Image (cartoon, rainbow over all chains, first blue to last red; front, top):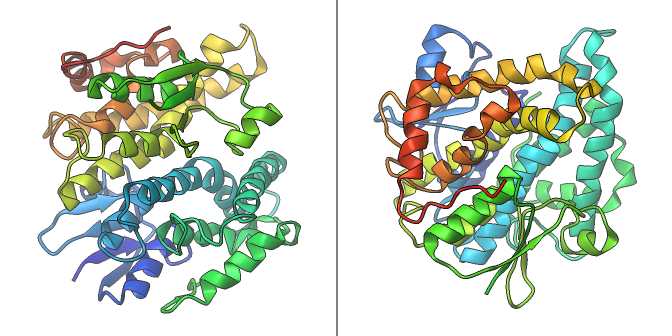
Length: 196
Length: 196
């Protein structure tokens, strides 16, 4: 049974909960935010959760790489080369053009004390996050999901921080197709909500 | 023959040149930095290069997704599930923990006029970029490459902005294993230098 080191309220960690629950795979969850200790840095020198640890001690970091590994061979990661590539495109989009804005705005608003100096970053984060939502909304004009034409790990990845974007100060009613897609994700068999 | 929309001096675009040259695949290269025009946004709504366009018009964005797609079935992307996952881990590391610091420092120092206000970001970018290099140096203490034990697309991806990190003000002599790894990458058959 694999072990996940994670933080329940982190969207990146929630992705791993979501794929494991949807796959019906048993796992052990160790909730921690102590990622800069010597002990944890031995496990992941990059000092981040989530981290997947297999029974034989092998370790894998990076939420979206963990999604790919766990979903291999399941319907959540397409087998065809092109659909797999499109899924990866959205996974990299999520980490580069979405998470650094949408997740960081949530972090500043929810986790830092009110009046913190980092609140000055919010306007820039809201502009860049809105651009990411525009790109998603555009995609959803012609497709229902992000994982090569079907529901899969790119949807789980994008869902993680999109569904709680209001925490960061985004008004998702500007993107109605995203709202409808969030509902389609929640309706998937085995869907597991974030434990906030 | 696929078409690449790219900018030769961009590291993200150079990755695509590198994999195509190393695979010996013919391609057409359209050099452009006009990524926010209506015409280009029709091709890639996220307004970024590189963009891969197949003969039948299908399009793929995100440099590291393009690497995965082009290298599928070649020795540059491992077939085994675990080695593939480790390769993906480094590809996501590159886009989240490396490129936003190492590439952006280079952008500010090389592309913006001297004295630009964004130079104020450089100390933070240098600290975060150094952390990324520390993580790479640590990995290279026990392995020669980043792509599941062998040379492959995670090496091409990390090479793209690491080899020109001095442009951004990094002194790579602090990380001697990275220096040796850069030479091992340059020694690979079919290696193609960046066109600056």
